[in-house]
Image (cartoon, rainbow, N blue to C red; front, side, top):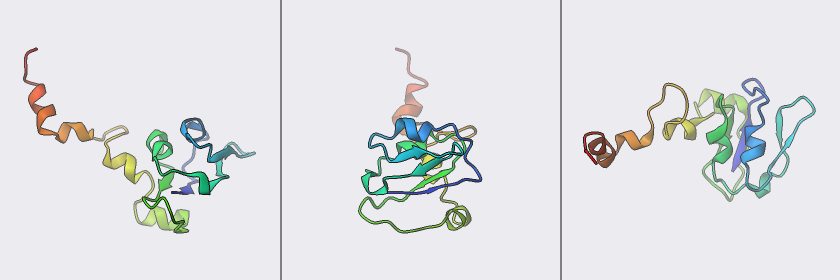
Length: 110
């Protein structure tokens, strides 16, 4: 479930607002997205994946709000953690590149 939108990292691109399939966010008056309907979050991680500055944290439990603060998420390295694990973002290695078949396909001649 969406837990944190980091006001200090957010660049007001509102990608999270655009990609959320359940309309969890509202655009704030200052341009920073606000979690307006947290109970509607389906924990699809789309918002966290598309955030270009790792300003979001989606907790893996879709049933329970854990109530983590931005500071706690920052200290624990959770902001953008899912995005990092799948290899999205500059300087990160895509998950597929770790796959044996993907590695073989680079050498295959089709």
